[in-house]
Length: 82
Image 1 (spheres, rainbow, N blue to C red):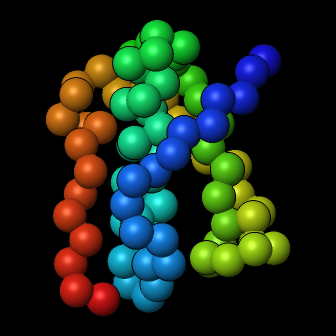
Image 2: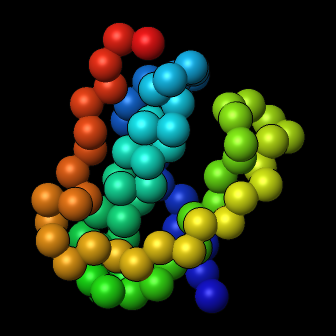
């Protein structure tokens, strides 16, 4: 098993109602990046780790995800006003 770090080029510190949408966008970005590097394939099962809220010390959730086969499902969702 390998770990591949990716630099996410969007602002940090999204709070409130937009926080989960931001986390989902970050996961989509990671999946897109991994597909480009050919280290995963569509339909592959992956594990995403996240917390129940932003900040250090809140990581407590493992998400078991299937890499989407439809590229539209990997597009970021715009963040609205918080």
